[in-house]
Image (cartoon, rainbow, N blue to C red; front, top):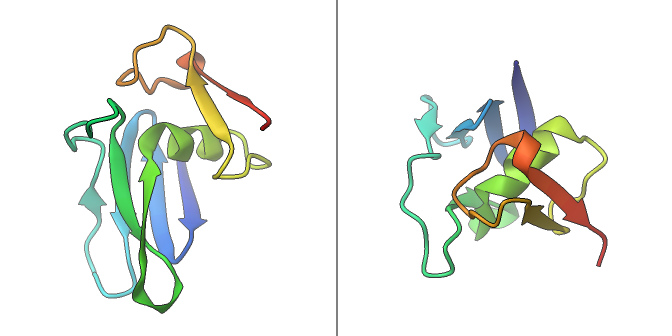
Length: 97
């Protein structure tokens, strides 16, 4: 099942653990889930916010938001098995801060 989200000023398409993004300036979808992990161990992607600024968002938060519409993108998402690269929805849960 696939979902389309608008996060900040970027369109996001989520199909399982596969993620594509599309900004207003681009015509094609760009796959982002194959990005290498950052130093903190999480896969992140840069999203265009209003007025052209950029925000890095963890892919696990995007996947969790696709399956849980009431989730706020800035809340913490936890990987149940401890593997930060396992972004399967069954492995993700969130906590309120």
